[in-house]
Image (cartoon, rainbow, N blue to C red; front, side, top):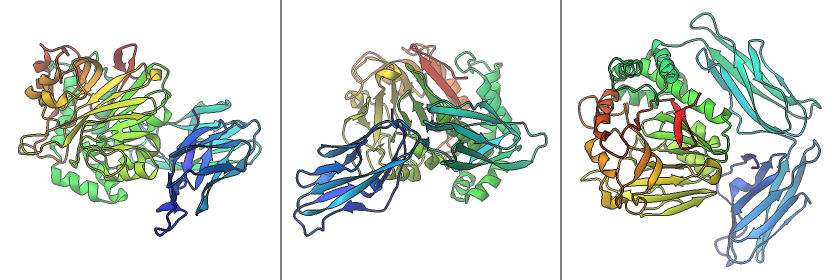
Length: 515
């Protein structure tokens, strides 16, 4: 799979004709400049043309093929350590030409972060580099390589900062990737703080638990105790305070994270997921799943990474690493406008029933994105919010072992509304809200039902919601109590409740804790 570093984004369109012209030739402005990895590869560019257009490349290594309405660019692998450029010219009679500049370099940092943010709890960081020439790494003396030996091609290089002794300390340094010949160099700041709240330590202990082996049903279990403690942290923060936190600048928000137990967990969970999705290399036949917040999950296969109902203060930072996102409905706690805008700016699919664009659908739809097949149904959220929630049934490709996941959003679970995507067959993972009585109706072998191998509860401790009044927070321990509702269903014994930052691995038909 080729790796594309960036597509330079510009406002508007590359448009070679005026509105008064009969002939029309348009290409999104984001495709003006394209960088490709030394491994080469291909990409498809949408072209809006009123007639048959042509394309020609100035480089023998860069091939342009017209597959109307697409222009397919195919770049050969580099055989030597060098940098080369080509110009692709798109033409249509009656319109000025549109030029696309393609650059291929011998070293490519794949979706590099603007900085590495570390703590005593998250000390490992990584960078994915594609290179056909020897690499050198430099870093502060408090950083050591875990896997820093250069290999040609694409590799994730892993490094670890040492533990800081005193609480409240911080330190900064620089991490640099360069080539031995001096033709390439890239520096990324590294920032580490020793600050860790007791709540963060509690969340870290929860991550160390195996949610598939340690049931929270018993109040005597360690998982129950940890979840109960986390719920007490949630109860200490009212919705007005959380909304205030979301509206603040990054600097002011970080100050609140250092003084609020649950906000420190909220930030720590994001940092863990953000770091993991960059560094995790998924083996063939395997899928990794992270729970971020509320009903937000991220799934990574050997070839694709996607998100569902992602909502987080820092969610837009995920855009370079996600290939597409699905959004069940437009409620504030299920959408993230900056993330959607960032995804669309990168030309990546955003599947909704409410946001105008090529992937908007207000009726049952089937999408095909690469090897991913997504089937949807449209349901009511409740007695007054009708026909507003999309259920997404996502079947991953062969390299993921055809893993399938169903995300239900805030559906009210009228089985008749599920028939377009549920037919009583089996699925690997079903994501529900918090296990109320209505949710058991989806389980079964009839039309509009499904037989899941595993069920995840979610939508827990949404901090925008009220404590004890509508819209009320679904609590962690309330969801634990709801687990008993599923004892007599097809999902008996396979109902779990991940919390923020937890991750699982699916392999050979089984979900287990990801180390």
